[in-house]
Length: 385
Image (tube, rainbow, N blue to C red):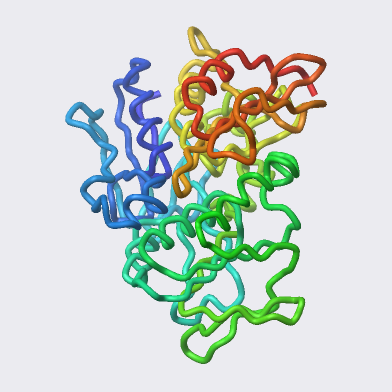
């Protein structure tokens, strides 16, 4: 293998390029990205960058010792030839490679009415820059979706002096991921900080002519808003692979080491649906840690077809910062048959909860308990589904 093309120039793509050099690949590496920016850190976009504490230069992921790669930025891949591993770009040009690493990520799921001014999603640097311009004290903001992105935006907007309402279709935010009791504990943090939370009702439409004026709910209420942020999940960027030889399944379908249906193609990051032997099914891990850790595994698969010295993927882990809380979560809560709060209280500012199956810790949730959470996380022993 003399050349590798990395399709996607965000964290997962950069880490894949690093892993190629770390594992001894000396050929040409081309990194293709649809954004004009070099790789940047996305988690601060909803927090310190949106708050104005960080600026664009602070988001740069590259260091002084990055691998030698060819950057092709501002160009989008539109087709992959499985026989030749040749990538066609949106300007008609082609890049030939012996191996391909798909790291095209995901995009924010849209909501009808986004054509109105004042309606935003948050996924890219441009998204964050546009939203930051609208965060003025006294502005009324409605956030659709009380997941972690929505909660972080609400927290940041509140700190900037906005009047914030969070709208969530589920009766309890995050109940599907954390369980009703702990989901409710995190939801209460909004109201404790003066942010209104409206649960158990959907959005009928966004109101306004030219510019948004509010959110009409399915229960007949209307939430006035000068700015609306839609945080209802993300869709993997894999349409360019449809009809080709790479199998898709809510993303690029991969084995447990990032291998795809095409031997010279692997996939990493938010677009990659890896087989998870613990869950017994395909699973997309849309978290920063996965984008950092999994490229080394996939690169070993691409270069060697085997995995010498490369550990399997770790259990999912993510963190969030909301108001004065640092929230950390790891593991497989859906496998648990019990949940115990072992330190603190869900009614207080900090606690540690451990999810177990037949007495074995399979997941953990920590709020302002970083040391204790880390200890439990190291000891997680997932059991088969």
